[in-house]
Length: 512
Ligand code: MSP
Image 1 (tube, rainbow, N blue to C red):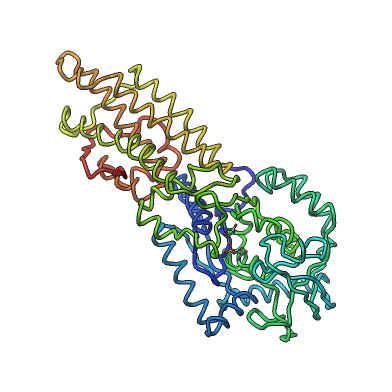
Image 2: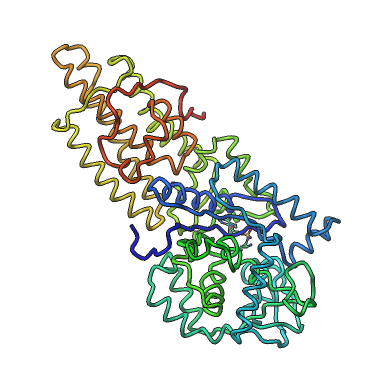
C-alpha cells in the first residue's frame, strides 16, 4: 500500500463541469479515467470515494441563461441532466455527484470563507483588470494577446469594481517549498515545471468576489458581493468530503488524486493549495493534468461544429470500446486526436481480432474437448510455470502503471497476456493433442493455462471495460465473488478447476 496515505478512504475527483454547455469527449475523458482508477482501487479492496459533479455558478452561466431566456436555476437544472445521463451511459461508478448550487455547498463555502477571513487572509480592495468571461479567468494586460484571452482567443473585458481579495502572495514561498519537497504532487513533470516557473515569477493577491452579477454564493456579511466562481468551485472537493463538520471528513480528506485537464492546472496547483494553506487544511496528494483531444486533427469547437458527443460515440462503437480507446490511444498526460478511423482500428484489431478471438476460440475448445469443464492444473508443468512468471511481470507493470496513471502502458501490459494467449494456442495446437489419447494430460494443462489466462485478463479489464468484462466473467462461469479477494485475483492459478465455461455472443463484433 501507498505509504503516504494516512486516510482510510481513497478519494479521487474529476473537475466539476460547467453546465452552460452540453458534455463532450473532453468531459468523458477525465471521468472515464477517474472511473478506471476508482474501480481498480475497489478491486484491490480499498474503500473508495469517487466524486464528480457540476460547476453551476458564475457570470458565464448567468449570461447563457439570459441569452436563452430562462433563469439561471432553470438552465443548470436542465443541463445537469445531460451530464448525469452521460455518466450512466458510460457506466461511471461515482459515489457522489456534487452540484455547487446545493445547500451543503453554500454552507461549506461560507464556512471556508469565514475561516480564511479570520486568519487575516481576506481584505476589501478595488479590482481593476482584464477578465475573460468564457474562461472565468483574470489576465494582466501583459498576458493578453492583442486584447484577447491567451487561453481561448476571445476578447477580454475591462473590469473595475470593489472586491474582496485573498492574500495569495503571502503563500508564495511556502507553496514553492511544498512543490519542491513533493515531487509527485503535480504530474506530469513537464506540467510541474510550468507551474514552478509561474509561481517563481510572481504571485499576486487574488480577487475573490464580484459585484457585477449575482448568480453565486454571497460573501458572508456583505451580500452585494458574490464569491468568485473558482473560489466557490474548488471548495466542492471539501464539501463532498463533509467539510466543515461532517463525521467522515478526516477519513476522506485529503484527496488522493485530483484528475483534471491541463487548462485548469493553475487553479488546482496554485490557487487551491494556497486556499488550503490559509484554511489550515492538508493539500491533496496528487494533481494530475491530462492532455487535450483534437478531433480529426482539428481543435474541437462549437463554431467548427465538430464537438464529439460521447453518447453518440458509445452508441456507435459500444461503451467499452470507447472507454478502451480513450485510455489506450494516447499516453495520459499528452494531447491526442480522436478520429473515426483510429476508433475503428482499435476496435477491429485490439478488441475484435486479439481479445475477442482469444476468448471465443478458447471457450470453444474447452467446450469441445472437455465438455466445457476447466481441467485440473499441474503447478509443476513447464507451461504453467512460464505463464506464472509472465503473470508476475504483468502484475508489476500494471501496479506501477496504475500508480502513475499510465493507462496506455497498463493496457499494453495486459495485452502481452492476450498476445501470449493467442500465440500459445497456435504453438500448442490443442486440436492436434486432442487426436492422441496419450496426450490427454498435456491437453489438460494447455486448456487450464488458457482458461486461467482468460480469467486474469478479465480481472485486469474489469476497471477498464466493466460491462464487457462482466460478460467475459459470465462466459467463464465466474461471478464477482471470484474477483473480490483483493490483489490476490491478479496472481496466477486462481481459476477453480471444474468451472464450467459457456460460449456466448461475440464480445466485440468487427466493424466494416
Ligand atoms: N468548471 C471548471 C472546473 C472546476 S473544477 C473545480 C471547468 N469546467 S469545464 O467544463 O470547462 O472543463 C472541464 C474539463 O474538461 C477540464 O478538465 C478540461 O481540461 C476538460 N476538457 C475540455 N475540453 C477538452 C478537450 N478537448 N480534451 C480533453 N479535455 C478537455 O473547467
